[in-house]
Length: 446
Image (spheres, rainbow, N blue to C red):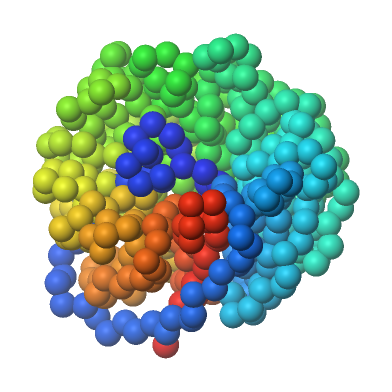
């Protein structure tokens, strides 16, 4: 499964740590299997005395790509790329992708083989493609003259881009365009939300299918999670399915994540009892038929306190769901694991167990390797913490502070490559009031 990395936090409850937060994690064995990693140095990829934000990462083979928005002092916010061809050991100099003339925001990067696709907001939605591992890029294509928060998925020669367009003070349309020639040209623009005002949509491509999930947070007081699929490479779409409607008509449901593996579609989201909630749960639904129909919803959290902002990964027959949960009193990171493709889940496990608050969790799973990163306020200003498993989450190594910085760090992302033997972690770090940079650290199995 291609891991999608969001360029920004999903809003709402993301105020707590500037990103996503999680709850309870699975499984039984407390004695870790021998699993050792070697960590590289902390790298400052943006390294400018300015405000850098809204970054995104992608990995393919030995190549690592990081894009971000940079606002020079008195200048124009622009989108930059740095790439590594040696598994994150070193990076090329920053490459300007946007015009540098008009403000450019919210970049998103996707990589597959030697193909690299990047989209961002700049007087609409701009798109650029590279077919040589990011060394050179085709000229920008304008996919839309308005829009925000682009997301990309791709498979073989097909490239899919979705984004939101404001249609009123509290209304959004979700639009979509497909390319079938590696991003050199795009077909017509489709509106895929049927007037349901869906925003912040996640997108996955698998076996000539396109799968999208999103919510209408900010549009009304009772957002729902909706799913839509295409089985013919994005040319037409089946009707929308409201996945959260069966849980309760007045319960806000948002921050959905999606994963597709073989014939199964997995979706998780956060569902609360009010917009100023006293209770939030993590809800999971699965489709055994590539999204044609879905099985009943399963609540993964324990129904005590606020369980928020889940992340989701699938590796083989294993399904991993993590989230932030304040059931213990403070917010901790929890994980639950299914080893039977979502038929059942093991008991939740608390991965952070800290005295401070933990959140903004990110997962990466490949083969037997599972990596988890999150923010933790225990040291004072938040740092980026990490745990890893080499046996599908049966056991975990110790918690490691990857950033260990005197300043505030936020928005961690983790990706893997080479069957999980290599891991890559990115984050934002505040160096001063007006200086936030994009940081990076690699790890590999010894």
